[in-house]
Image (cartoon, rainbow, N blue to C red):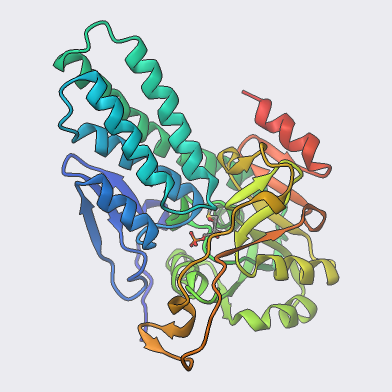
Length: 363
Ligand code: MRU
C-alpha cells in the first residue's frame, strides 16, 4: 500500500494533547495505516493505553503520565484534602506500574508528588475552593511539562545537528521522533534540524522488530517531512555500517545511568557495537529527564519484558510454531561505545559521570 506524504510538517503532529474533553492520544498502534485518535476521560484507561503502546517513547510517556495524573485529580470525586491525598497516591501508583524502563515516567510522577505537596501545604482552606485550586494547578503543571518537552527537543535538535555529516548517511533505531516526545523528537529532532540547516542526509531506518517502530513510525515521520530515508531490516545493520559510508548513528534513550550506560530499544546495543567496529560515531539524544543519576551503571536499569506474542505474531498473524519466545523491550549500550550524549543543556562527552553530573546540576 502507498502512503502519500501529507503536506503538513510533522512539527505539527501531536501524539498527545490536553483538551477540555479529556486527554487525546494518537493511536500509534494503528500507524501508518490509520490516523485514529482516542479521548481518555478516566486516568486508569490512560494508564492502560501507555501499557498497550497507544503512546510510547520515553519523553511522551512522561507527558502522558503528567497529563494522566492531572486528569485523575481533576476528575476525582474527593471532597476533603485527605480523600484527595489518598486518591492522588493511588493515581501515581497506577502510572508507576505501566512501563518500567522509561525513567521519564518516574521523573513526571516525582515532579507531581513535589507539586502536590507544595500546593497542599500552602492551602489556607482545604474546602472545595482550595481543592479546585489544586486541581487547576496540576492541570497547568501537566501542560507545562508538555511545553518543556517541546522546548527541550528544539534545543537538542540545534545542539546535535552540527554533529551530523553535511552530506551522507545517518542511521537511527526505533522511533525517537515527534511521536515519541510530543515535540520534534530527540534523535529525529537532530536529523530534522540538520535537514533544515541544509545537510543532505539519507536516513537508514532499521525496521525495529518486533514492534516495528522503525518501519511504521520513523519511516512515516521522515517520509511526511520529505527527509530521504532507506528502510532496512534489522539484520542489515552490520552490512550497511560496513559498506554504506554511514557518517553517524543517532538514537534516543529510555534511561541513562550515571556512568553514561544507556538503555534504549532492543537492538541498539548491537548497532553501537557494529558502529564502533566500523569507526562510525554513535550519539545518544535525550532530555535531562531521561538521566537517572541514582544508578551507578546500566546493570541496574530495569528492562521491561513484553509479551511473547509480540514476537510470535505479526499484525495478529502467527509467524512461528508454538514455541517459547523472549521479548526484552530494551537493551543497554555501554558508555564506552557512545561518542556523545546530546541534551537540551549541552553535549556531554566522556567521561560521562563528570559531564552528565555537570549538566544535571545546571539550572
Ligand atoms: O517501546 P518504545 O516504543 O516506547 O521504545 C521507544 C524507544 O526505545 C525510544 O528510542 C526511546 O524511548 C527514546 S524516544 C525519544
